[in-house]
Length: 375
Image (cartoon, rainbow, N blue to C red):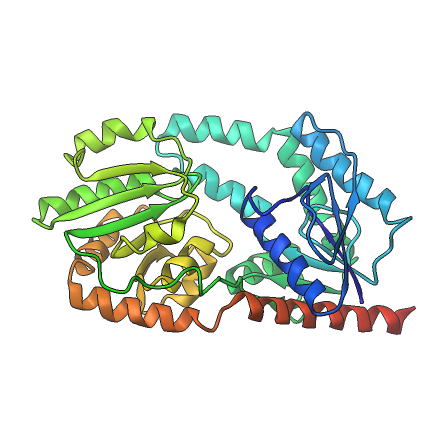
C-alpha cells in the first residue's frame, strides 16, 4: 500500500508531531508499505520518499495556507493509495487530529491567562488573527464536507470534542492513543533520594499551568512538607520570578531549560505535575508514567484517561489550587509514590510505539479498502 503523510517539517528534532510522524513513517515502511511524505523541509530516512513542497514561508498564515495548496498540487503528480493528514491539508482520506479542535484550544488558551487585561489582549490576538482563521478553515475543510474515510482521535476527549463541535457520529472515529518509547523512558533502578521532587515539563508554561503549580507548591511548603520543583522546557521563566519570591520558594525551584535526554530528568523526580488547561493527549504524561512516576493532571488532558486513583490524581480544573496542593502533599509519602509509580509503569507498557503503528496501519488499511469499494 502506498501511504502518504503530510507535515511541514519532517524532522524528529522539531517537536512532538514531527517526532511522531517521523517514527510512524519509519515503522510503516518497515512493514513493507511504500511511504511518501509531503513536506517543506525533511530529513531523509530509509524506506521513505520525500515529496518536496515549496510553500511561502512568511507570514505564518500564508505559510500554512500555501502548504495546504501546494500539497493539493503535488497530489496531481504523486497520488498515494491512502492519504493521512493532521488538519494541515485540504485533501486526505484519514484525518488525525494531534491538537484537538482548534476553537476549543483557543478558548482554553484564553482561559489560561491569569488577569482580566491579559485575557482581553489574548482574546483580541487569537480571535482576530489571520493565522488562526486560516488554521480553523483548513482544519474544518475536509471534516465539514465529509471528505474523509476515517477520523483518528488521539484520545477519548478529542473524539468527544470533535463529535460535538462538527456534529459527526462517533462511529466515524477510531481512537488511537499515542505510543511511548518504553525502553527509553523507564524507571530509575532505585527511588531518588532526598526531598520529594516534583517535575513540570512544558513549552508553553502558562497553558500548562505553571503559575498555579507554583502557588500550590507554596501552600504545600507552608504545611511543612519538604518539596522541590524542577521545571523543564523552553518556556519564559522571567514572568514567574515575582510569584516564586512571593510564595517563598525561590530556593526550591530550578529551571533547567530544554534537555536532550529528558528520560534522565524523569528518573530524578518523584512525581509529575501537569495541571494543564488543554492537552489533546500529553506525551509528557505518558513518558512520566513509563518512567515510573505518579502523575497529577487535569480532566483537560486527553491522557488523563490513563490516570486512575492507582496511578495518580486528576483534578477538574487547573485553577483548583487547593486540590493540586493536596495531591502534591499526598505524593510526598514514599510508599504512595512507589506504589502509584509502579502501577503507572505497568499501564504504559501496553502503549508502545509499536502498538500505535499497528493500530494506525489497521485504520489506513480500512480506509483503503473503503476507497477501493467506492471507485
